[in-house]
Length: 271
Length: 290
Image 1: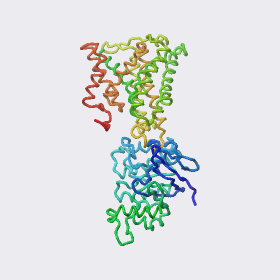
Image 2: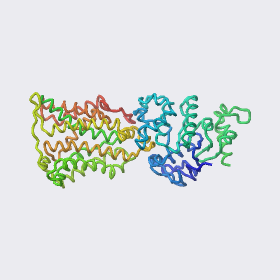
Image 3: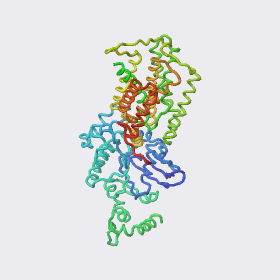
Image 4: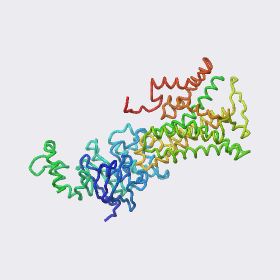
């Protein structure tokens, strides 16, 4: 079995010294593994990513308990550029490309060594040939899908060992998402990069991940491999929008019985 | 012809100073109100290096220029770095305090009397005759040439240089730049170093032409409207803004009243702020207030 690349041990994140957003979560990502972090809005997924990538300081937040270890080094509360240089690179949910820089400049800006630029660019254009045609176009003029491609591509230019993607599918057409997930699997297979995917769409995340964690109210309430989560009743009911076991289609029922379900879910998970 | 030469020389002075404002604002959105004092410090540093390297004027000038870059980077490392993540207003007020501090130090070390670095370096300043019976002093001509070189180098650096690209990236989206492994502190220190270098070049060349006194920062204050008129985040804007301000100033001095010279840049600035507050080539920023 491959070695553990990222390990989050009982991490707690506190905003403004008062609000606990993440409560003692533990998760791990192995070399070359695709791991998904699922959950609804406000579950603490993005905070977890920000804690790993070192961006809590900007929001007056800190990892107050526990440890985040990457490749044997403690990285919690370290500056973002230092974490990125260790090989943990984040593709954020919004503002993911430099709007006024061309595609080529977006790719060139993060390259640590000038000598690597050409080789890395060629590699990137193999995964995203569309970007080669758009080389001279500024980031602000790209479509949503092209922007997501460029964001992933420019993250790859940092030569990451762990690529973290916040909401891969947000605002994109299903066909584009399908194309992106196919390319992500290619990237993982060919470059051996581990991927930590934060997604609201469980269907997308579970279609490509090897392992997944479900977050709720700042805690991890469920985890397991893809098969286990795909067949788990709660995941099917609350995240995949499949039948809730009473013959009722929960995609419509969720709207009217959302609160009841939330209660049932909490009771089941927290005991 | 002389009118044209005067405009070009004044525009070059303003442009060389204005690009210093632009470099820092573009990268960090901080208005460096100590730029004039840093420019003046560059001129006074020539006096210091002139006594250190007596008989080697070029070495003395080179050392002063290098020291200016170091001073700029140190201002960031020891002062402005602490302002990262704080309110922009706090950073701007810090630059005001820094300016007052530099003025005080200069008076203490070099006195408030007018000084002539060209004499200290044994450098002459002959008048050159140009076509059309126009005249220009040697150091003014050097200033115009330096301005062209500096702008050419800065355009090339920002467009094609790796660190220039990183400066543009950090100016647009510092968060994303950090996520891509770009060390923002290095980028900001570089911007401060370059900004102080351009200011110091202007200060040194003006001092070689006509001496230096404690009132030199007023010229930088007049160059500030040039940066604003062109657009505070546009390098090309600084050049165009400087040309507009210099043209208006020289023409009004020549045809109306020399006493207007200190007022003209700010009149042009007021007009621009009413019509186009973000300047000719600046980025229109979204404001969260009216």
